[in-house]
Image (tube, rainbow, N blue to C red; front, side, top):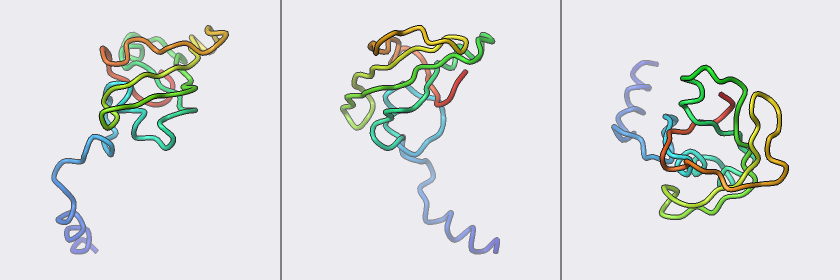
Length: 105
């Protein structure tokens, strides 16, 4: 069994392409990993978790990705401490400035 695992690992590249990595990245890189450009995903800024702010996230409603998912525009609704803040969709800010991950903070 171990031999088969090593054989498969030798076929894989040493570093995964950005679209397959699960590490935090800018918003567009995180959304480009999901089917449909990330529409319907919950995403949060890593710094919210680091500051102890829980149950906060953006629910992505639409995206326009470009440059293979490293740039673009994204819109969604903000949920802060479990309560919906945005009545209607708005553009998600800080998308390139901060690190993002899927799920809630």
